[in-house]
Image 1 (spheres, rainbow, N blue to C red):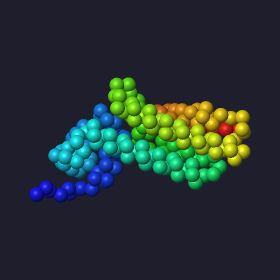
Image 2 (image 1 turned 120 degrees about the vertical axis):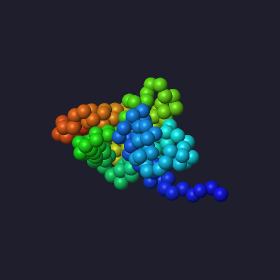
Image 3 (image 1 turned 180 degrees about the vertical axis):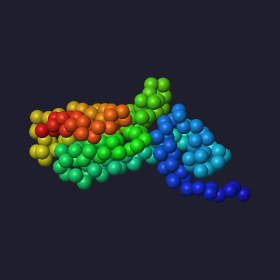
Image 4 (image 1 turned 135 degrees about the horizontal axis):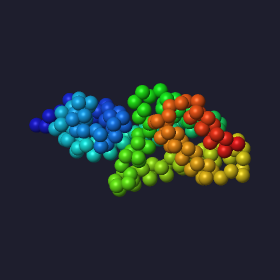
Length: 193
């Protein structure tokens, strides 16, 4: 008779996200996972298949959660300029108050595992396309409503804002000066005027 699991897979996955996000894939050992997740090695292998498979599931959960949050922000904030301002302000606030300076899990994974990891590169490209499209569609919403000048190109602005957003997430790992980061964000967002 198979033994029942003595842990919640969803909670364990959340803990795995935290650990991989803070330490990265390579710096996280199996013993780190066993200790942090509070489950034994055999259960970890039986449930997730190993470190790489657990990382893949944790990374997918993070991307899904971040994507849902972004979609909700853009859906709820009808002012496109204010929506982007909130997005950047939230990123800056998170970056400057996080004592671990985790940054963004997607950005961290990109810089740690690319080049050299074809499967993750494919996942990252899909995620990049998805977020760029969200940004571009949101800009187009602003153009359509007249909030952003009709002369602007939604795809170009979406790409630029996506790049700026990720750049700020990287820079904030070494420079947590909130005022300086906000000035950079404000300068970039002025392109919507």
